[in-house]
Amino acid sequence: MKTCTLGCSLLFLVVVGCGLGPAFGAEPLPNLVIPDGLGVNIHFTGQPRDLDLIRQAGLRFIRMDLAWGGVERQKGVYGFDRAGYDDLTKGCVDRGIRILYILDYSNRLYEEDRSVRTPEGRAAFAAFAEAAANRYRGHGILWEIWNEPNIQQFWRPQPSVEDYCALVRQAAPQIRAADPSGLVVAPATSGIPMDWLEACFKEGLLEWIDVVSVHPYRPQAPETVIADYERLRRLIKQYAPDKKVPIISGEWGYSNVNWDKRPLTDEQQARYLARMYLTNLSQRVAVNIWYDWKNDGTDPQEREHNFGTVEHDLRPKTAYEAAKVLTETLGGFSFDKRLDLANPADFALQFVKGDRQAIAVWTTGEAHEVTLPVQAGRAVVVDMLGGRRETSWTQCLRIEARPNPQYLLVGE
Image 1: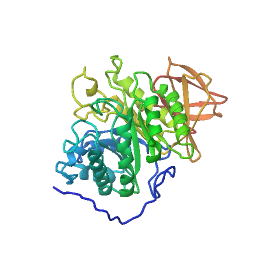
Image 2 (image 1 turned 120 degrees about the vertical axis):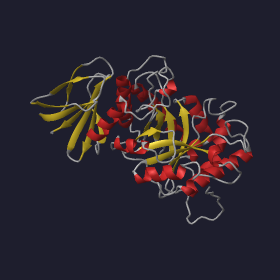
Image 3 (image 1 turned 90 degrees about the vertical axis):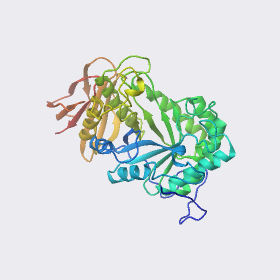
Image 4 (image 1 turned 180 degrees about the vertical axis):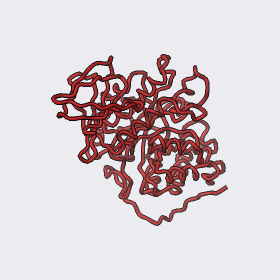
């Protein structure tokens, strides 16, 4: 077992201050270019075949727990290699996949519950976080502090804004000093709970982090998140008027067993995956992690077993094919603007790559014809699962907007 301990000496100096943003040299969040910020949540370490399939789908991010209790089993001794994180990190770096590591969950060596509520526990967690950041520094990793601390499932005996913020306050500067290339991310909330977030902001959370992460789960369609992002941005601006703090969607998906118990077909799940990625990009959310990469079991009635883009045995689901078509068709295109179609239920997102133009079109309602404000010309139309056809027009482009997104490659 390899171990990692940290002393006081560092080979670099980092200046960190309230309101100054990320440390100098930090790798920024990706631009709104497909597929740079698109990814999946995983539940494995090492280098299984999954990483190749993720890369083949065109995805460029993974999010994974870096579990404190699994790494530090003896006080002050960190078994990152034993736990498979060395191999996972190398596997991602070799494949051009960027990493969001969640520094999370408790450690029985220091805390009784699934939380951190004591000075000893906070100091030990911060030391573990510093060791992780030091070990994997230089790869532009997003270092997320905990997962969904606003719900009892992940912060026991009950969520505490004060305890959570005290943990971030202690760990964040140590992470930033250990890995100047990384970004400190928090609070990874379940949903977008405005009251809980505002309470964290009042405690000073925005002073210590670089990026706000939320998990916008909902039974409704992805486009309903737009108003939530607007409210959250206003709240961030209120509490950090002189600091730019971007929002990322750190975890969000739709199971075939939806939150309201309504079943979703594989096609509906795929539709929501594509529309989630596209909607987030339209809201200038640069990192978008779909939950989940793989079905976590085989029970068709269990929600947690049916979030995946692939089956439990890695057979591709329709969601995987939709992700691959999206990244291949619009690869290298960056989001430009949403075109005005008058009806708020209709979406037409313009993307550009040099002098090339592409448009993603769909509706949240029933299929119907829409008119796109583009000049006369021709286009290749690619449907959500890769079907292709050609079209041309002389005055205005009329096309049927459907619940499944279509991609128009204008001029091709």
